[in-house]
Each structure stands twice: as C-alpha cells, then as structure tokens.
Image (cartoon, rainbow, N blue to C red; front, side, top):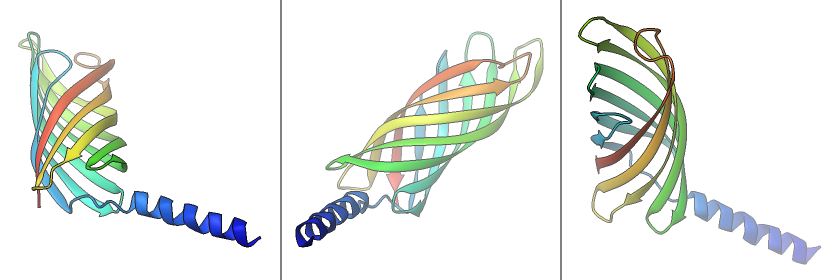
Length: 156
C-alpha cells in the first residue's frame, strides 16, 4: 500500500509540475495569414489561470472578391510540450462586416483554434495556428474556412 501511495504521489507531483508552466499575464501583437488572399489581425491575449487564457483578434481580410473586418474572441487551453514550447486549443465566436464591391453586410462566425507556440526567454511569443471558422451569412460566408496564421506577440 505504501508503494502505491508513493507512486501516486510522484505521479501527482509530476502532473502538477507539467501544468505549472506559466503563461504571460498579457500579450499583444499581430496574427498574419488567411485562407485566401491576405489578412492581418491585432491580437491581444489575457491570462486567466495557469493554463487558460482569452484571445481577442481585430482583423481585416483582403482577397480578390471581398474585403472584410472582423472581431473574434476565443477561450484557449494552453498545455506545455517541451521546454518553451506549448500547444493550445480553443473555441470562440465573432462578428464582422464585408464589402464585395456589389454588396455589403455583416456576418457572424463560430471558430475553433489549434496551434503551437514558442515562448522566448525575452518577452516574445511566436505561434502558428489553424482556426476553422464557420460563417453565417448567405452572401459572404456560409461555409467552413481554414484560417492559418503566424502570430508574433509581445508579453507583458
């Protein structure tokens, strides 16, 4: 019984230390990329707990057929991989407006998020993520888009 209790204690401490890697209180920067054309977002991340955070992105999209602005909010779970590498998953929603040249309007979306990030020893985070977005508007975005982007953020 003592061996089982000792093994359980070691396992519990190992799991706690793996989840104890802290993420920054705040991070602000850019998220660059898109599924078609070019897009950029001003990105802000806010620490909630040891492995949870909120991310807010205000962005624009410029493609051959449409120009759009959008605001997306995501709740993310951050898990350590190795050293300064983390991976994260999240879910959220957003609103936006679009202009096709002929029509303009608004849209709503739901989004998922999965990615990997590297926290440098100085206050910088680089990330690469894929965000599937399901839009709701018949004229602009009523399908699934896979938004792939590179993130560069300053931590403070």
